[in-house]
Length: 111
Image (cartoon, rainbow, N blue to C red; front, side):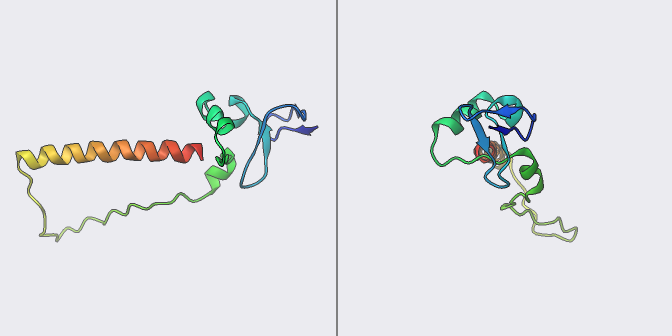
């Protein structure tokens, strides 16, 4: 029998529990001790090779930033003027990017 690193209550050998893949912290496999939703807990339980990282490790680990946005240059003369159809296309592109980012964040949260 061990103690939950979150609530300090006992975890029996038959109790479902999660171990942080980063620091080894062990907590009850419930919403309160993990900070996960019931869907996320279910996904961890039912999917092989998904790993859980505790809240402390998630806060301390640097987040990857793959998308780099160049800084604005006041002397930039290469600005693009968008017409009506270009503006509509840009709006659609931004919506599509936003949906992809939301999906990636959701998947990252599960990992």
